[in-house]
Image (cartoon, rainbow, N blue to C red; front, side, top):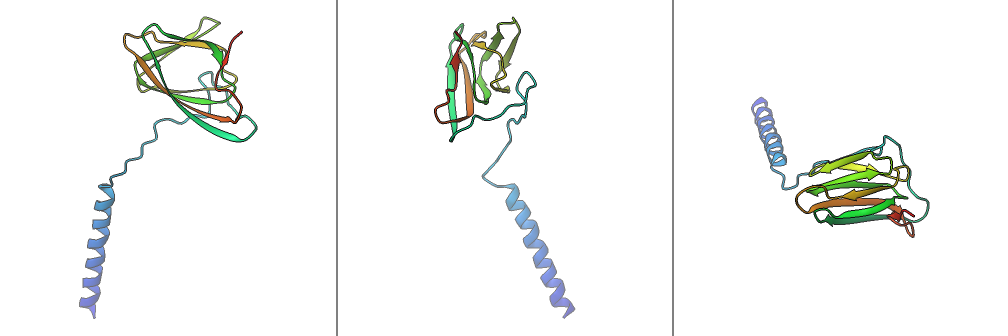
Length: 141
């Protein structure tokens, strides 16, 4: 009886450790890239009222290219894939984002431009948590 119990325990241990080894060799690798509850200004944000809508954009900006002065009515997360973009506000303050950087902008973020100040094409992924009918970007007047 004791011999059967020891054999069962040994088999369980082998199966358990094989399970761990198999889990370590998983073909799926999930890595959290970025999370934030605040914008680049340190403000909290809220989502627009209405029927929820998620948006995903890949934006390329050529060297010296610039997205004109604008604001965002809904929060967005930006992630730099390549190159660099510099966000400039009317106040004269600026912030440069480079490959691998992530950030959050929202309705409290002052109007700004976003220009390629690097030496190669910049690529940025933008995910927007909005509502149907709410624009992603509002051009400044």
